Figure (tube, rainbow, N blue to C red):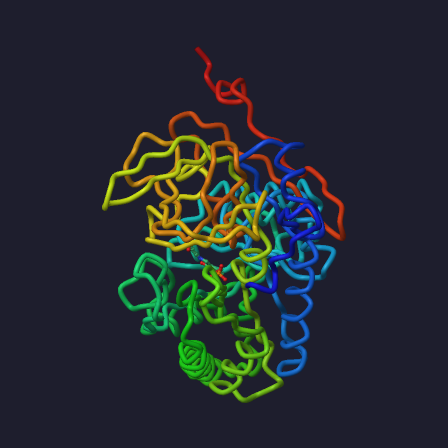
Amino acid sequence: MASDIAVNNLDHLTWGGVDTVLLAQKYGTPLYVIDVDMVENRALSLKKAMQKYYPNGEVTYAAKALFCKALSKLIAKVGLSLDVVSGGELYVALEAGFPTERIYFHGNNKSQIELEMAVKNNVGTIVVDNWYELTCLEEIAAKEAKTQKIFLRIAPGIEAHTHVHIQTGQEDSKFGFTINDSLLAAKKALASQYLDLTGIHCHVGSQITNLASFTLTAKTMAQIKAEIEKAFGLNSLELDLGGGLAIQYLPEDPLFSPEELIEAIYKGLPDPSVKLHIEPGRYLVGQAGITLYTTGSQKEIPWVRKYVAVDGGMADNPRVALYGAEYYGLLANKPSLLAEEKVSIAGKCCESGDMLIFDAKLPQIKPGDILAVFSTGAYNYSMASNYNMLPRPAMVFVFGGKDKLVVRRETYSDLLLRDVE
Ligand code: LLP
C-alpha cells in the first residue's frame, strides 16, 4: 500500500499521477478518486493468473463493489465479465452497453420483473438461488420461448474467516441451495427444456485473508460438482467460486496476489480442464479508490481523545459503523509532515457512530486541510446514502496524470427529484 503513495514537488499527494489537492479544488470534497490504471492492472493480473492454472477460466467483476456507467465500460474494455445482483445494476450495465452474454445475474430474491428483464435482454447466465426462482425462471423462459443458461448457487457449508456480516457460504445462510438440495435442484433444472444448467456457484465471504478457505471451498465444490455429474451423466459443469479476496486497508495488512488466490484454489481443485469462474469485486477496485475530504471542526477532550471532523463520513463510507472497518488516512496537502498527533477522524452526521478512523497518527491538522482516506474504492460509493440529506460525492477517474469526472456530485435539488408533493 505504501507503494501506492506518491508525492509531487509541491508536497501534495498524487493519485494516478494527478495532484489530489488540485482535484479537491476542482471538484470539491468529499470526492471519490479512482485510479483507472490500478483497476486495469489488477484485471490483467487476475486474467493472467487464471490463464496459467485454468486456461478456460473466466474472471467476472462483482458490480456491487463499485458501479456506474464509466466503470461498466472499463470492465467491458479490459475483457472481464460482469456479476449484477439487481435490476438496477443490470439496468446500468445495459445502459452502458455491456455485452449481455458476459453478464451473470445473482441474488437471493430476484423478482419476476427482474427475471423477465434479464431473460428479455439475453443475459448470459442467471445464477439461480432457490426453488422459487427455479420455478419462476422456467415459466418466464417458456413464455419468452428461450433456453436460459443457469448456474445453481449452493451454500457449501464453509465458514470463511471474515466478519460475520460478510460471511455467506455457511450452512445457516439465506443464500443458495443446501448441499442436500443440490442434486434435486439439478434434476429439476435438467428436466426443463427452457433451462440449460451449465454450472454451479458459491461465494463464501468477503475480505477473506485466509487463503486456505479458498482451497477448502474449491475442494468441497469439486465434490458437489462430481456428484451432480455422476448422478446425471454430465461431464463438464462449470464451477464458480465467487469473490472474496482481501485487500489492504492498513499499510500493515497483508497483500495477496491473484496468483496466490488461484494457486490456493488449484490446491483444492488440481484440474486445469475445469472451466473455473471467480467474481472479485473488492480486489479490483478497493485499493484503486481514495476519498478526499476537507477538515473542519476539532474537539479535544484532555486525556481522552482529539476529534477532527471532515465534510463526509458514514453517508459516503458506512463501513466503519457497519463492520468496524479500519482505514488509513494522510494529509494530502502536506503528506511529508511528521505525524506527531493522535487524532480520531469523525464524520459530519448527527450520530456518534459516524467515525472514519480511530487513533490515526497525523500531523497537526488545520481547518481546510485535505485528508485522503485510502482503500475506499469498494463498497463506499455503492453503499453511500443521503443520510442527514447529505448530497452524495462526485467520482473522478484518474489515469496517467489526467482526470475525468464520471459521476457528478449530487445537488440539493437532486435531493428533491423524487418528492412528488
Ligand atoms: N460474488 C458474490 C455472489 C458476492 O455476493 C460478492 C460479494 C462478490 C462476488 C464479491 O465479493 P468481493 O470480491 O468484493 O469480496 N458490503 C460488504 C461486502 C459485501 C460483499 C457481498 N458479496 C463490505 O463492505 O465489506
